[in-house]
Image: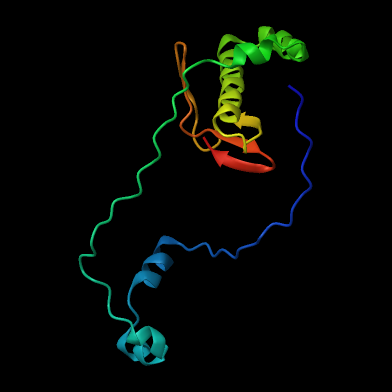
Length: 153
């Protein structure tokens, strides 16, 4: 599979960061002394104090996993245009070859599932290391790239 073209570098948004020692952090977390209360803007002073026991909310449920009903990568690899990919897969160590085949299958499944996506790359360790156990790969931190955008997988 050919590598995607390098995207044009976009201007990065910059953020100021102050690194605090633990003592400085603790001091900033304490309420200001009574003499400093007069310096608090009126808008802040008008806000009610936070509830001592705020209601606990449940995080939104993750969408259900979509389970494919058939494997698609064999057809992709059988295509004459995939000759080099087939040759390359034979040169990888077994774990790496399995991960590459899984990436290819994931891209094919995404294309089949949603035509708006045109996945060009899958990174199984984007936000967490993948776990390989026998013939199983768990890639809970995987992401894929489609049309210059990255999506969690």
